[in-house]
Length: 347
Image (cartoon, rainbow, N blue to C red; front, side, top):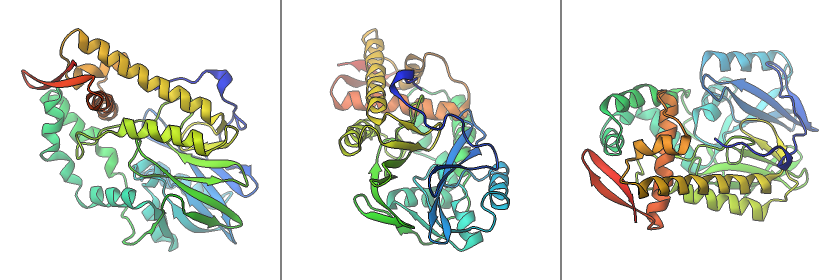
């Protein structure tokens, strides 16, 4: 995670909505906040007037507290308003965990990018696959102990299963297309890195962007290598996405993120995130100049501390590998054999 300097961002709504309440960001655009059972303890939900009802952007995780949060909204500020559709920005359970539940309950259509839908469907259909080979060997080969690997696969990935059954059909959202929600028109944008094809919605008329987790204030989105794509380059894709956002969106656009507060200052925040990841790459290079390191040994190098919590370790390990992979591709690191698996050394 990385802190933004206070002077670079402006927060038009410094106080988030309380449980069971919404804040009107723009006329007909509402912001709610749901709890999460993690260190990052909340997710933002947005609702947009859509004819005689409301379109939902993201749905929260599938647990008892989030279902209760929906009941509170439906009995409170949404009372008498129908839901028209669900747009899930990406497959992570804190964003789409209850999308299927809402679709089933209210007869709604789910809209998202194809990649995100298929990943969510794969996890839902084969949840035990996460504990099988080659995934287990993936973690062990990069220096995690057998005990840490078991904890990670058993508990650390449990959150991926916190998703209600998905609809068997969906509406595909594609970059550069336009989506009309009520009287508003949004341009569909997609970004990789945090997830493979995360959807963002930009309204030129309102000068706002629903940016999901691509750019967050004060914290850096997790950018992880997935075990199914062990040589992937999500960090390279993420950095390119940040440059694209700077080119395509104005500096004064209102950013509605998936976590933390809405803010103005997209370009400055993107630059901070780029610098943050470059600094992590330099820390890894310096550590590997002292001698070969496994990815597991590089986790405290870039996070500044050991990480024991299985949920946090899942993200930390995979993010360390994302930095390693981008350096290997740039031929600044090379992979060498270690006593137990693989290690990295300066090229």
